[in-house]
Length: 355
Image (tube, rainbow, N blue to C red; front, top):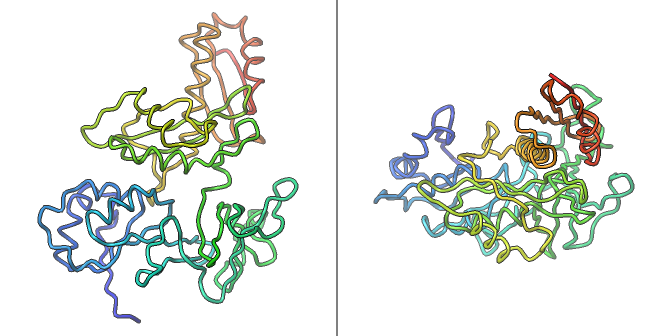
């Protein structure tokens, strides 16, 4: 309706390294006015020099599908001179729930996904008993984002999957968020991604945003690793920029300087070549949680039992959300009960056997 032309950069889009490397040349050649990508993809694009490409046609950048680290938004403005604004949506809401205007005084509000769609109602609700949804939150209070409106799906094909998602025409997004006095919506992470340390709720986004400000860090993802005493402890996986190096001590020092909540200081940092991504460029945290648990259980077996050749397999699922399977050599068969007792101290489901 607005006379827009859409340029699709190959079937794989910004998952293609060639498209990332050629991004600014494409913007210049087609005189693109709006550019878009998920935060991880745009972070990769911003590492590619503009090299004299004329990108003056750009008016704005759009991003969504995952939380936008402030450091990426700052670099986008520095490189392009334009704002990078966020949109918020889900397939279950026909795409969009809220968007930040691309022009005007309110454009590019840091951390905000803007305002709800017209003819819809977006409410932030408290957790009630047994994590059920309760009353509407006050302004500035973090809760679970819910959506009502004609664009909300009536439900899934298999109705058993509707439980906890669709309730009387309301969509429970599973996203944590809050609103300000003007009604803008802010996303504070996924409810299932909260790290709960001894009853203290830790928002992984706070950790990730702080670590993304380190000059050597390209991407950061914080998850909880199982702990027998605290339930969970925060750990952080980081992927470095090309050619960058950083020590473990430097990462811890940076975190302690930038993260105000001491319980949120990551217990461990794991430097990896790349973070696992979904097909649309979201960081796939279930895999990272399994990786963190695998490392923790492996270390426990090595330190507490001096087992160097036990096999540990961790997967999602089960009544406790995570399954841990430990396979011991025949020579360790006498230790099965002791290992099982040690693992029973954790909240995950576990099974120890001899291979």
